Image 1 (tube, rainbow, N blue to C red):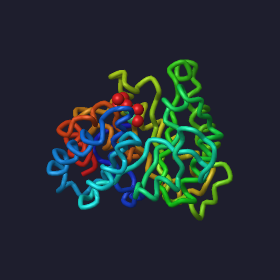
Image 2 (cartoon, protein in one colour):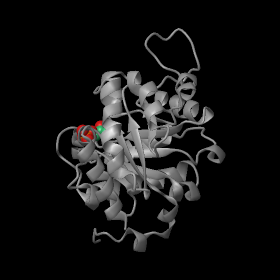
Image 3 (tube, rainbow, N blue to C red):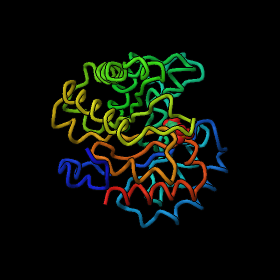
Length: 270
Ligand code: 13P
C-alpha cells in the first residue's frame, strides 16, 4: 500500500472526523507561561479552522488558560482526573471540578500515568465512564512498549487496552470518545512510528472499536497519533487513512513549532 496524501480518496467516512491537534504540556509551564503561550500562538493559527486545537496544561494552569481561551477558538483540557465526583482522595481532581472550571476535554490513561502512577486498564475504564457522565470529551491513550512490539504483541496489547477501556460503555453515549495511539517507545525519544506502523496500529484500534461498540462508531471515532510528532513529520502522519490528528508533547511547548504542526497536519489532510 502506498502512503501518501490521499486520505480523502481512501475513506469517505473520515469526512466526519475533524482533525484534532492536541498539546500535552505534561509538567511544564506556570499559569503565566501558559497564557503567554496562547497570546503568541493564537494569531498563528486563528485562520486554521480545518482543525480543532486543544491545549492540555498542568492542573494549576487550567483556570487561567480556560479564561484566556474563552474568546479564542481553542479548547482546554486536563491531563488526568479521578473517576469519583468527590471524596477523600488527597491530591486528586474530580470531573465535577474540571467542568466547573470550563474544561472540555480530559486525557485518560497516558502511558506516563500508567508507568509512574500505577494506572491500569481498569482505572482507564472507570475514568472514561466518569468523563462521559460529565460531558467531558475523553482522549484515551493506548500504546505498546518496545518489548511488546519486539515480541510481536502489539495487536494483543492494543486490542486488550481498547476493549477494557470500552467495557460496559453504552454505544448510545460513546460518540465523543477520542483515542490516541502513543507507542511508548516513541514518546519523548525522537523516534517516531513510521507511517506504515502508525497506520497499521490505528487500523487495529479502529477494528477493536467496531467490535466493542459498533462499526458506525468505529468509522466516526477520531484516533490521534502521539510520539515525537514534530513540524516535519506531522504532514506524513496526518495524511494517513486512520490518523485523525496528533497528541504532541515536547514540540507543543513552543508556539511556533506547535503552530507549524497544526499547519502541516492540515496540509496532510487536504
Ligand atoms: P512527545 O511528543 O514529547 O514524544 O510526547 C508525546 C506524548 O506523550 C503526548 O501525550
